[in-house]
Image 1 (cartoon, rainbow, N blue to C red):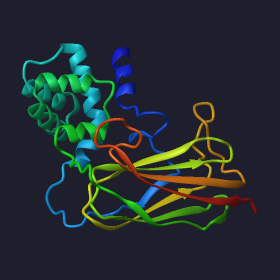
Image 2 (image 1 turned 90 degrees about the horizontal axis):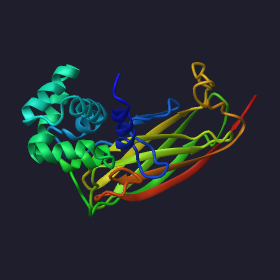
Image 3 (image 1 turned 180 degrees about the vertical axis):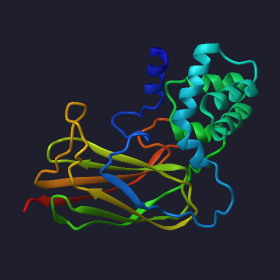
Image 4 (image 1 turned 135 degrees about the vertical axis):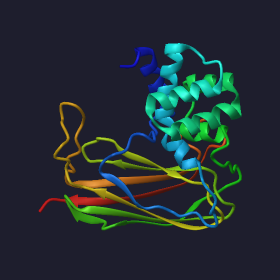
Length: 258
């Protein structure tokens, strides 16, 4: 449907340095059950909406630019975004970014092969920045440590921040027995100083809908699985400003067959 050039740009736009996870890719085996809540923030928060619509906005805006060139006004460009997607929210996020940066700079940013969702939304002032933030794990537990294949494994975490955090990401990576990489990334909204909890579940049931001719399918073999969780300011692995690794938690669990 889209021109090959646009597809190549989209792949680059969504990429992250090295092997770090992209927001839009998540393992079906990994779910965020309990997310850390913000303390003392009651105002309307556009940051999650900006990040969750990032891929769609970049895709449709690139398509418009490739078809028609750069529009004469932000209004014209963002009206076309609404027309193509039927989404008033995408149009609003487009308008906020374009009006803030100016049409020319907004177009340059969209066409850049070196941006990520958090950096983009920070650039247009929809996600808060805190370069003096911190976060350290207070506890990190994987339960049960030994379970039968097909069980659900809980990763329970508590972290503490003394200076608050910037807009960031939490990534969980699992080193599997059959060497198939499993990872998921989740948004960490900027937080006030305090203590926060997170709970992630890992379903060790083989996916019956996974087609091995299309992709690698995790079989959850017997053995030990190493789990790594990263708390980051900004997108983990990015070289952009306002990016750092706050802390890393590590643990493991063992699976056995009956």
